[in-house]
Length: 386
Ligand SMILES: *Cc1c(COP(=O)(O)O)cnc(C)c1O
Image 1 (cartoon, helix red, strand yellow):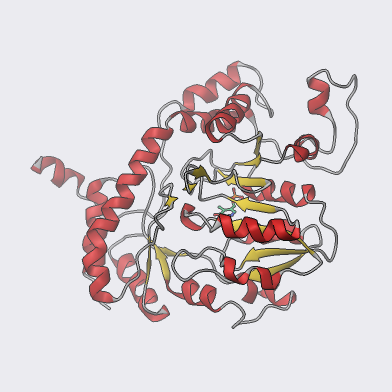
Image 2 (cartoon, helix red, strand yellow):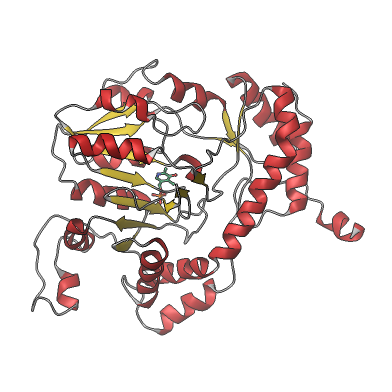
């Protein structure tokens, strides 16, 4: 054991690293052997089946990214110029951009100071007669308060879309994330729990959206219906784009899906290691650790610290960098960004978002992370005092 430890002692720890689970190359070779590497081949179908059966969604469609799945959702909501969409300010740009591309106006909601999820208590005040959509993001895969959000959305008849990029396998009150909204979007980017490099999926729970979603994903044609023999020729019927990934990417992704138990167990161990090792240090230094409400099951997407101030975070990231540990901050407040300001946003609008955006830092977290590396990271962290 001692020799293993010496040879395995890390000198640096990357923030993210691609993890192979075993069958990726074999399945890609199989996709090539099938002589079908465009979209909707054998492996895309297997991925669709996996997502539909695992999560019990009406329809799953692989896309080229979560960004593109969000763009499909925005088209499906039939947004027109001047329609408003409520989005959290603490999220990735794509959550908002997809709707802005359709001419919609983003209305930024602030987040909770413990989960950093859209604050449902502030939601109703943002609704106007022009509100045509509510987009929620389950930050770190910890569920938003979906009961309260659904009650408000239903009262006004506004569809909810879940940006579930972090949340595959997460649950709210025993129910899988991605099954609450009329639609949900997933990301299989290299930084997410399951990956094919660049990829995503649209999960559809309201069957009324299925037929049009297939058309939009196939360049605005009814090609899917043609292949099923439901129409005798395929033609241009709607707006759309090319949102299908190559079956080689689906092959990579399917290998990862097959290893879901291994991946999720591994990530649980990584998360729990950090959380156990850092309690005392966090308490002593006034650092806030992740909060998981009892009724939420998280998919172990990330581990973060909330430092007491921006200055502490800056010196902390520098301290870790000197020890060759990659720690990164996360979202900048969208309402106060250059683009957000064009929609009337300004500093002060979403104080919790601004507060957390200055203080949150993410620790190395990927499927290849070893206990030795984690020990090295934790040692480096605990050498830092506020
Ligand atoms: C990663 C991410 C996206 C974008 O995913 P891509 O697949 O890279 O387009 C969107 N929303 C959230 C919340 C994300 O974390």
